[in-house]
Image (cartoon, rainbow, N blue to C red):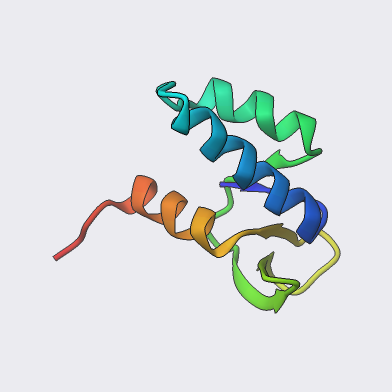
Length: 88
């Protein structure tokens, strides 16, 4: 999951991802990484990260520390679905 440094960056990241998908481009990690760089977002791979707060319409993800990042709720659900799929 990509985390962003600010709520505004998280909103911009999601908006740009959806703009690419809306143009009919197949989204992959390479494209998402390029968009993430534009918004100063980073790929977070630790599974211990979880939502810890809501701020300005975004979710703060982490452990409540200095290395937390932000995502939009839509992106969070999208990333969880891609990671874990539909579980019975």
